[in-house]
Length: 350
Image (tube, rainbow, N blue to C red; front, side, top):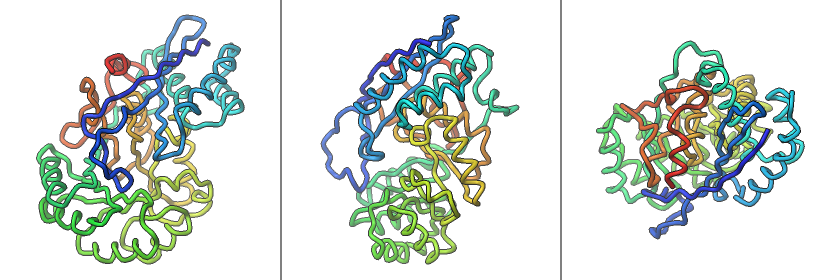
């Protein structure tokens, strides 16, 4: 198999503002890595690596180095299965973000050969229709309320509010007042709160009827302690999901799984089995992926028992052609075999 690697830079239309990105200056474009995998018979599959150093500590250079090590592995891949190829790549460089690119390309290639979408290869009889949340950035309360009203008008029934700064409580209260009781609100602190701060703010937010709180603090023990203190609130691990200790016993209600961090579709399936085995709910979110990563999450959703909305409505943050646009707060995989048609052109437009 021949592996080709292309770096693309996605320019921001609406940069993400979280507890860690307060400034209003336009950030550098978001790097994404497109891979093209061609088999000996000429069939082609595409995948994506989406490292996000501020989130997962993985740099673009690290991904490119790992993919370079996979090139020789894949060139000698005649007759090996998908699982065997992934094992050999992991042996060369066990970097989930780079492994995700190869895994997605292999699933895309399998779908192209079979003339089937990946969701059907995964055993589903119908394409999944997945509810997704809108993300409200760490804005001042009035701006957050306005953004929330706009999202509800566009059909979103669940809003995820970024928190982790001094306006947390006022922001959530303003949004709840703006959208009323019928809209689900979840918050995401990205692990920015200290323990005492998390306890205090969650107490202050008790009347806002939160659906979920994602990564209030970093670490299994901290999340477990908060979950014990707030038994009626679903606590979810996100960044802490990279810690194997999280899967040894249930410490909170849910785990957020991501294509990039898990190492692709295969990795999400593996981690979902581990999570469900100890009693967690799971849901999916992006790491500001491109459309191949988003499509992969939509396909794998067909194989998972998901009961909560997912954080996959993020492509509109980039200055790029419109693909995978949510309709009525829902997304479904793109048409076509493999991961879907009209996806690779998005990268070529950057």
